[in-house]
Length: 180
Image 1: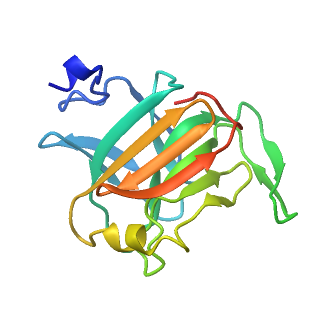
Image 2 (image 1 turned 180 degrees about the vertical axis):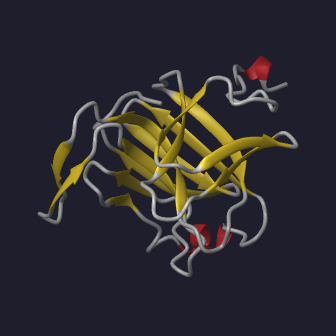
């Protein structure tokens, strides 16, 4: 069983206990043992965050998304305590409000670009740290309109992702060692 291997569920299948919503006004609920997020137009990005922080871990989850919405799974992330001006790698400056979530995001990208499993630095460096432009197998692994599976392994500065058991990203980055 998963527990025998040291795995522990983050979600009890019934409630959102252990999670806090940050950011925008999307609605999160539990429906038939699944977490369902519903976006709300013209609001800031919304995040359903664990209350607990994690450093080294293996995260496995399944997801199904609307084909027109870009989203992702934040790992080792935090929220700004005060408004913060950030300079991206492209030299642009952006100001993020207090409470805005930032950190590593495992991209869920149902667009033709097909970058699901890529690693994006949400609201911090605001760039892809590792994308799938040279990983055709991973780009083709995403199943539009179906359930997909992520596996994310974080150990020290190593971050690895898989989509539907196909290796996607293998990155070394030490910007954050733990987070929600």
